[in-house]
Image (cartoon, rainbow, N blue to C red; front, side, top):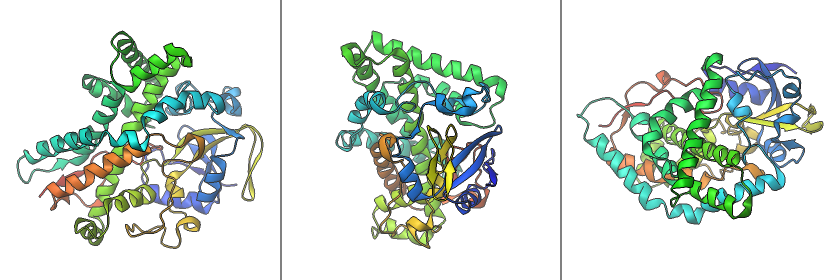
Length: 402
C-alpha cells in the first residue's frame, strides 16, 4: 500500500483528497511530523467504521503510543490525546459524558437561540456597514469569526474578555506549524485557562452549560474536574471552528458560482441547500483525528491492522462518486438527495450540528440581504489555506462589500 503524506501546508486540499479516494477506501497516510496512520476515504466504508465497536477512541490501544513513538511535543498531540472527555471514550462512559451536552444542543433547544443569533448577526453587519465605502474587509475576521465564538461562549458561559487569548491559543493548537518546543506550554496554557473558567463557574454559577456540567457532577453524575474542563475545551474549540469554516466556504462557493448565487438570492433555491452542499463539497473539517483498531478490521479488500490509528478524511468522503454520483466534484445547490456525513456518523456524531446549521442559516442570508453586491477582493485562486490538517480553513477572506 503506497503511503500518502498529508501536506502540512495544505496547499491543495482538493488534489490531496482526490489522491486519497483513488487509493481506495482505506489509505495509508503520514501525518505531519512523520506519524503513520490509516485514513478512511470512501463514504460507505466510513459509515461502517464509525459504528464499528472494534474502532475505539482509547489512545492506549494505539501501538505507536504504547511503544513511546509519539512525542509529547508533536504539534498534533492535542488532537490525538486531548484528555478525558466525550471525545476520547466509548460506551457507557461516552454516554455519561455526552448526555448533558446533547440535551442542551437538541434541534428544539437550539432553535431557542435564534433570536440571540439574529441580534449578534445584525450587530456584526452594522459594524461592517459603518466601514468606509470601498474599503477591503476581511470577512472571516470581521463576521465569520465573531458570530460563532460569541454564540458558543454565551452557551458555555465564557467571558468575551477571554476571546483574544483563546484565539491565540487555538491558532497554535490546530496548526501543524507550531514549533515543537512551544507545544507543551501551549497545552498547559489552554488547560489552565479552561480550569480557571470552570473554577469561576463553580464559585458563581450561571445559566450556561458549564454550570450545568458542574451541577450534574455534584448531583451524582460523577463528572471529574478533568472531564468538565476537557469537555468545555472541546465544545469551545469545535463549536466555533467548524462554523467559521462553513460560513467562509459557503461565501467562496457562492462567489465563484454566480448563477447559483443568483438562484438563492432570487429565492429559487433555499439557503438550506447552500449550507448542505457546502458541508458536502467543501467540508469545514478535512480530517478528524483519531480512532484505534482493537483487532484487525477488513475495509474493502484491505485490512486496518490491530493497534493502528485511523483518521476520517471528510474532505475525500464529500466528493465520493459512489455516494454522490458522477457530479460529486461539482458544487450544485440543487443536488438531491444530498446525504453527506460532514458532521460525522454513529455514537460520536457532532452534537453541535444543529447549532452550526442554525448559525449559518441566519448569518448567510442576512449577509447577502445587507450586501447583495458583495464581491471577493482577490481571485479565489489567491485565497490561502491555513496549515491545519484537520480544519478546511483560510487565513482570511478579503471582500468588497459593494
